[in-house]
Length: 137
Ligand SMILES: CC(C)(COP(=O)(O)OP(=O)(O)OC[C@H]1O[C@@H](n2cnc3c(N)ncnc32)[C@H](O)[C@@H]1OP(=O)(O)O)[C@@H](O)C(=O)NCCC(=O)NCCS
Image (cartoon, rainbow, N blue to C red; front, side, top):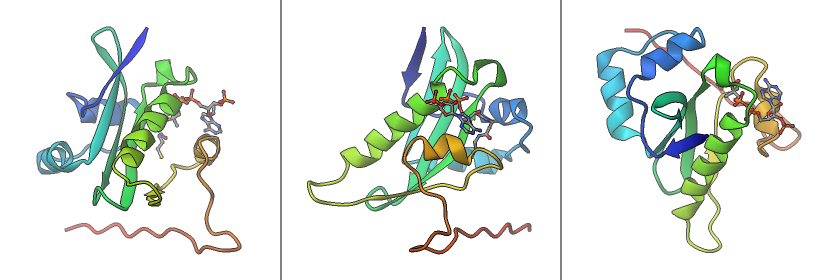
C-alpha cells in the first residue's frame, strides 16, 4: 500500500537521477528543504517512491515543482494523488471566497497528466504563455 507523508524526501537527488534530471547542489537542496511551502513524499513501506513540492508566498501564488514518481511506480495514480493532496494543502490556507493561483512548468509531453488535474495549457485565447529564464553563475 502506498502511503503519503507531508515532507521533502530524504534524497531529492536520487529521485532526480531516477528520471534523468540534473542534480541539485547542497546549497540548492538546503534551500528546497527549508523554503518549500508544502511537500509530499509517497512511500511503499519505507521506500520513497514519489515526491513533489510547492514553493510560493503561501497566500496567493503557489508553484508546483519537482514532481517525480520513480519509473517503476509510474502509472499507478501516485502522481495524481500527490498533486491532489498538495493542491488541497494550498487551498486550505485560503479564506472563503479567495482565489489562489497554482502554476507549474510541465516537462515535455507531460502536459496531458496536468490537464487531467484541471490545469490549462498556455498560451490560450485569454492568457499569454509561461516563460522561463535559466541563469548560470
Ligand atoms: C509525470 C509523472 C509525475 C506522472 O505520475 P504518475 O504517477 O505516473 O501518473 P498517474 O498514474 O498518477 O496518472 C494520472 C493520470 O494521468 C495520465 N498520465 C500520466 N502521465 C501522462 C502523460 N505524460 N501524458 C498524458 N497523460 C498522462 C495517466 O494515464 C492517468 O490517467 P487516468 O486518470 O485516465 O488513469 C511521472 O510520470 C513522472 O515522474 N515522470 C518523470 C518526471 C517528470 O517528467 N515529472 C513531471 C515534471 S513537470
